[in-house]
Length: 84
Image 1: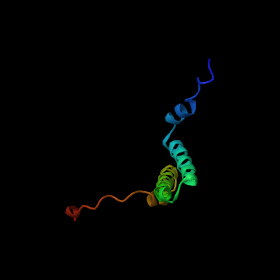
Image 2: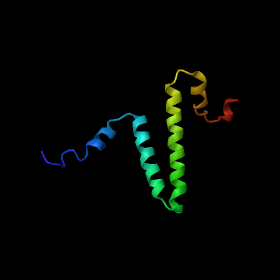
Image 3: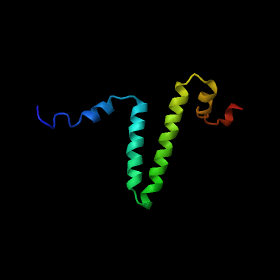
């Protein structure tokens, strides 16, 4: 068994993880890139971090037992004027 046999083990673990774990890993990657980013890259990376945070909050709310917390993070249905 060579030293490179487990080279992809962390990636394999991540690919078999749940959505929350993948979002957290993605948040760490984006945050690290933001630390090294120049001004041009900072804005889109900041937006990605915000989007990841919103997804994590929605997952947490959906998993909680609190009806109000779930309702706050439930997206609105698209408006259909014909339904009036």
